[in-house]
Image (cartoon, rainbow, N blue to C red; front, side, top):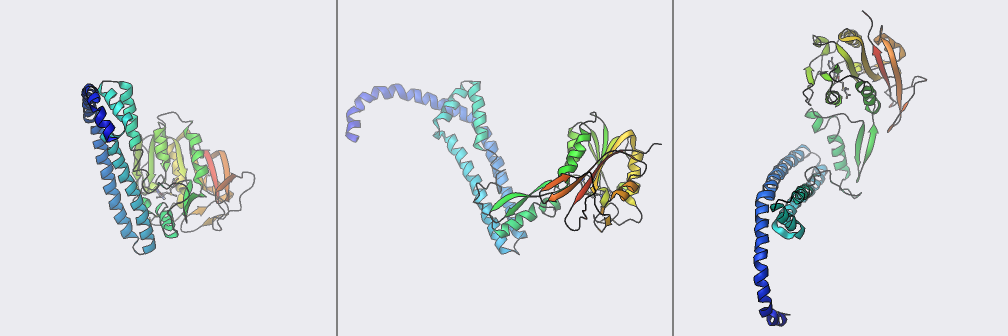
Length: 388
Ligand SMILES: C[S@@+](CC[C@H](N)C(=O)[O-])C[C@H]1O[C@@H](n2cnc3c(N)ncnc32)[C@H](O)[C@@H]1O
C-alpha cells in the first residue's frame, strides 16, 4: 500500500494543491460557524449541565447522609446515582466530540449555516437540543427496560421520597398525585389511585364554565395544583391554607393562616373550591390548635356569605359511615345535610374506591366505606348558597 501511494504521489500532488485550499476554506467556515453559532450555545449549556451535575452531586451527598442508618439503601442509591451522573458526563463529552467535527453532517450544516442558510441554522438548533435531550431530567429516573437497578432498600427509599413525608413534602413542594408510582424490587409501576382522580375533574367541570376574570377561592389549597390550574385558566384565585402555597401566578393571591380568622375576600366570589379540606378543620391534624364546636359548619356558612348570589360551592369530602378522629371527619348523608344546611345542592355524586387502583361512581346507594378499613368513598357536591 505504501509503495502504491509513493508511486501515485506525483500525480496526486496537483489534486492536493487544488483540494487543500478548498478544505481550508471549509474549515474556516466551520471555525466561524463553531465560534459564532454553536460554541456559545454549547458553552452555555455545558455550564448549565455542569451546574446541574454539581447540584446533583451535592444532593447525592445529602441523600447519602440522610440514609446512612440504612447502609444497604445508601450504597444502592449511591451506585444508581453515580451511574446516572456518569451518563450525564458522557453526554457532555459526546456533545463536545460532535463539536470537534467528528460528524460530517454537522460540518456540512455548520458550513451552510455560516453562509446564512436558515434551514441549516434551524437544523443546527434542533441538533443542539437533541445533543442534550433532557440529560439532567433523566438523571436518577432514567432506567431503561425492566432491568432496573432498584433493590428493596432503594425501592423503600424511593417510595418514601416520592410520598407525602419525603423531601419534597418537607420542602413544601409536594403535590398529592391522583396516581402514585410504586417502586418495588426492580420494577416501577402505578400504585394506589386516590380520591383526587375524581375530585379534580369535578372541580374542573365548574372551572371550565366560569368566565375569565371570575373570582374564586380555593380553600385548603396546599399540596394541590388546582389553584395554579384555575389561575392559568384565567380566573382570579385566592388560595387559602394554614401552610404557604408554593406555586405562583399573576392571577393567584395566597392567604396563609386559619381561614376562620381571615377577614374575607375583596370581591364577592363566583365559586369556592373546597377539595378534601373541610373534613380536617379544627381537628389539629395540621399542627393547628384544635377548635371546640363545629368549625366545618362555620366555615361553610362563611363561604355562603362570601359567594355572590348564584355563585357555587364545589366541595368534596370523605363519605361513608359518620366518623371523626384526630385527622378527619367522614360524612354520611345526615351530617352532609347539616353541613350544607340552607344550601341548594344542584349536583351530587358519590364515588367509591373498589380496588387499590380503581374508583367507581356509586350514586344510587351510600357506600359502606368507613375509611378505617381501607374502603374509601367521597362525596362530590355543587351547591348554591342560602338566600339572604
Ligand atoms: C388534605 S390537605 C390538602 C387538600 C388539597 N386541596 C388537595 O386537593 O390535595 C387539607 C388542607 O387544608 C388545610 N387546612 C386545614 N384546616 C385549615 C384551616 N382552618 N384554615 C386553612 N387551611 C386549613 C391544611 O393545611 C391542608 O393543607
